[in-house]
Picture 1 (cartoon, rainbow, N blue to C red):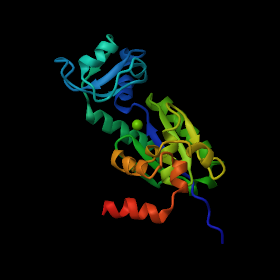
Picture 2: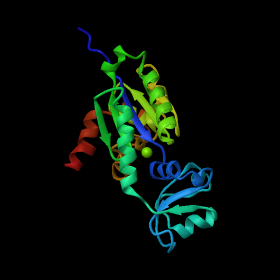
Picture 3: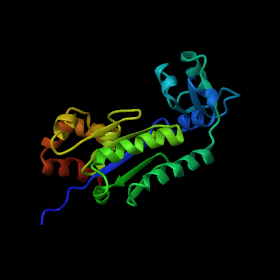
Picture 4: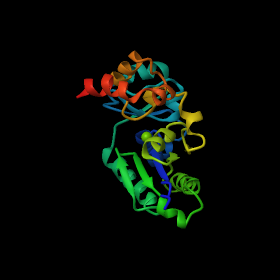
Length: 225
Ligand SMILES: [Mg+2]
């Protein structure tokens, strides 16, 4: 018997903290907004920013004064983690209408295995678009959804088009779409592993797919343990 191909969605809320603040406070609509530590003293760090602030070059991790140099009208608000937690639960409630196979990853990301839900829906894409619309209409924030046959690629796909978008990586298109990407596009490959792979002349996911697994094991895995 041929096993049924899995259909996995990865839903990632866009600019989560800043989007929740804007959703809660209509006065912030259309303004560049950042969530930051201690906005009054201007000494805090930018924790999150919305799309408008991003266009001005505001970056997560920089000091408020630096951000304001690039974006003088930037509105800084203190974080309200209880509120973000409540929105996280609201998101999961929407997801739970489509599957009970939900795996949260941090406060604003979830994997949804919708393989069994396809008896009720046409495709993973149909579910993803319904989720995208519902989140926008009911919560006033947006999500990017990646769809694939495994969790790793679903997560990668949700990063490929943002905000408020759906990206599909299937057996037919995944090589063409992901092989040109840098190895760090995939979850789990950070700075240190990237350097090691570069030493082996592996720069893209395409390079990684061609790499000899024995060499990888010897050069990467053995050094790791
Ligand atoms: Mg996110």
